[in-house]
Amino acid sequence: MWILVLNSGSSSLKFAVVNPGSGEVRLSGLAERLGSEAASMRMDRGGERQTHALKGGSYAQALDLVLAELGRLGLWGQLRAVGHRVVHGGERFSAPALITPEVLEAIRTCVPLAPLHNPANIAGIKAAIRAFPDLPQVAVFDTAFHQTMPEVAYRYAVPEAWYRQHGVRRYGFHGTSHAFVAAEAAQLLARPLTELKLVTAHLGNGCSVCAVLGGRSVDSSMGLTPLEGLVMGTRSGDVDPGLHDYISRQAGLSLTEVTAALNRESGLLALSGLTNDMRELEEAAARGHAQAQLAIDIFVNRLARSIAAMAVSLGGLDGVVFTGGIGENSASVRAATLTRLRVLGFAVDQEANGRAVRGHPGIITAPDSPPALVINTNEEWMIAREAQGLLNSD
Ligand code: AMP
Image (cartoon, rainbow, N blue to C red; front, side, top):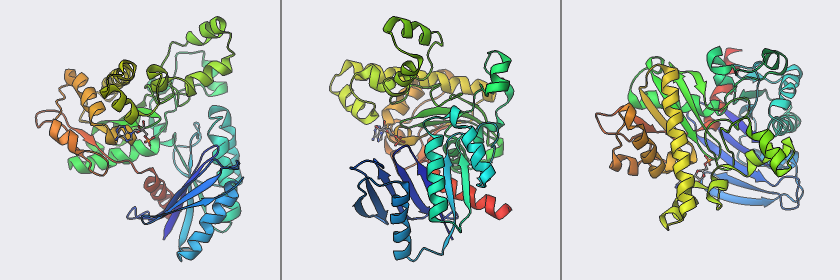
């Protein structure tokens, strides 16, 4: 049996047909610029790629194409469920949930907490219910893994009514990825996950670190929204909360404009004045672009500080895991980060680190160092496993 995994963005739909047992992917693809004349969909069938024009296409039309392809591949009838990535589940969801009208309503109540993401997730769910009315639909939440954080980690020092009435607390994100790579790391280390104190660093366009104690999240660098914490592609990460009022007066910006700038015009992009893409920044820095180098240095410094802080939340550290596009591919970011973590005893094995690029996970530290690992994340497989696990338990 197969699970169709959907990740709906504001104008995109990523999908994969995944075997929850083995992780095998039979069909995958990405529809982009949905709703515009330039909409298109790329499909990948075991290495064979096709692009379809979707002129003005919606989620529904993108799903129609997926449906037709499933029929051609003889997979129609072998689908067990549709698994949806949902960004914000608030305090309500600490595990995947079978989507009922009531669950959909609960996801809708989390929209103010994730105004960019949850509406898109809801639109994807509705389109999938129409396209696959007979299949169970399962929501897998980015926030769910972090619901095990203790109150000392999730509360902000703000008026209590903000928390009780408006849900102002830290939630954490990228939970599916952190949970997946922590379990994989335990296997690679040949130790039970339940005995390990790990810091997992998901470094992609969005970046967060997580303290994973015995397989459970006990702290995250991300907070109320995915803006807190590390420097990211276009997101600032931590800033002084006094900045909003100051810059809105000085530059004549509304609060909404300040927040938008912190989300979309900050991070690596702002520091480098060049790009939000780490690979391009590394190339520019190698050519002597000083601002690109500064952007990388600030990214690494914030990351190393955050990993060290997570070691405090864990009360020790058995290993650091790097994942996501940057974590899996950038040997230089990993080496620079671990060099800053010398204070915790880390020493890079340069050769092993250079070998660990996408598709080649492994341990990248010297024998007398605490281990640092590179693990390829696989959120689609994790969502498929979570969906299957929920249906089996029912
Ligand atoms: P993701 O969101 O996980 O796809 O990660 C995207 C980020 O990974 C971008 O900043 C890319 O530049 C970065 N990335 C991908 N490949 C490499 C590479 N070979 N070296 C450095 N950064 C990379």
